[in-house]
Amino acid sequence: MKKLMFAICLGFSIVLSACSSTSTQESTGQYIDNAVITTKVKSALFEAKDLDSSNITVKSFKNTVQLSGFVNSQADIQKAGQIASKVKDVQKVENDLLVK
Image (tube, rainbow, N blue to C red; front, side):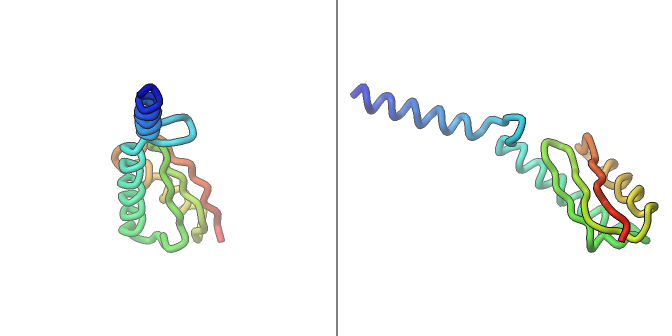
C-alpha cells in the first residue's frame, strides 16, 4: 500500500512539474501563447508592403520574439523589428536578421 501511495504521489509531482515553467522551459500555457505570438508576427510580416519575409524565421519564447534570416536591406531589418514589436503580447524582439 505504501508503494502504491508513493507511486501515485510521484506521478502527481511529475505531472504538476510538467505544467510549470523554468528559466529554460515554458509551461504548456506559455507554449500555446507563444505559438499564437509567432503566428501573429509571421502574418504581420507577410502582410507588410515592401518587405520580402520569405527568408525570415520567427521563433517565440516567453513573449520574446527572435527574428533570423535574410532581408534585402538594413531598412528591412529595422522594419521587421518594428512590425514584430507592435504585435500584441510581444515584450522583446531579438532581431538577428542579416542583409543578403
